[in-house]
Image (tube, rainbow, N blue to C red; front, side, top):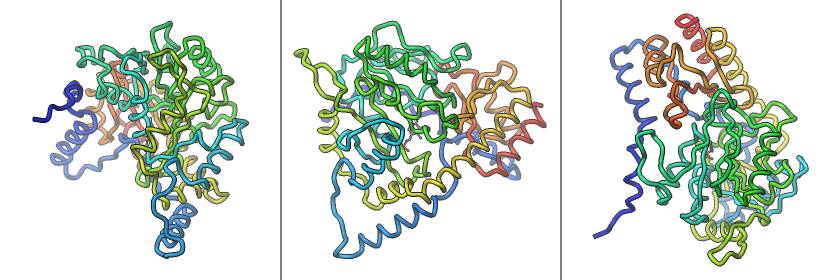
Length: 410
Ligand SMILES: *Cc1c(COP(=O)(O)O)cnc(C)c1O
């Protein structure tokens, strides 16, 4: 008899995207003529940049020849990619990160789900609300919580509420937290943390001997050069922060899969005997034990995102998505909506019309405009009454969606 991990039973059946799919299918079946526009899922839509495709083709050819074939690579990533990351993402912004502080992986979803296992079950974890659900669910699976409460929250986690008053960027908690997950630019709210806010987080972490897990999956969408793109641009962050980065949104790698986690050797936790332990050593042990490296072909593609041509092409893609976001933001504002985000992130976070719940608004938008978005309540109780739309689509679809929304709501 194999006893199962009971903590999995605390998770309600995955609801958000299956339920969206169910409602859209039911609507489409009843209205086969309707042209439904999906602005709901956080996935890129533009094809891979030519410089990346060329690099991956060349890498495939290398793999097909005896002289250049490669088997298992280094678990932490090939030097050519780690060096490109070090130079372009960090040194160029005045941040010193060593090669052995970078761990190349096959995605930030996995990294953000796996990172909790190097902390004790007793570590006190905080998340924002609304939140990227992986941070919460992976801690539930690990056994850090009780079953979800009637308020939609898991006892055992600390929730830091993002709301209109704080611009969806909650301040650090007074006490009682050892590890916090931050995501900026934020999914789902599309808002971004300012330098002053990040400085307060780093000061808080140092004061409380806490760790910041900083998810920067959308850093390349930041349009203001004065805003930090990395938590390490904040002095002191090398002592208290880990940073997650992904090629998914910056280079269209959602289907290719490549990311990395930065774990400075200066970040430490505490062992049962009170001794300081390097998180870099723990994560290196974890990574090399449970992961055998991202594919060579994929890493060549990721490195090409840093080439002159690759950078120009991916920057143009991001500009395209951000123009979509700007059109959405302005179109929704003109239709009378209160909107957030969409300036340094591809997501628009809007207050629902007339005080509707997130799901009521979902139904109304679907049936009256045939536009699909994501109910804010799916990202946590504080998301109730809000709704996420994304700029990941064709220009024609974005313009059509705005026209329909303005016709009905404007
Ligand atoms: C898309 C996204 C990621 C990237 O995940 P991958 O597994 O690298 O595709 C990470 N964090 C957030 C918040 C995201 O929205």
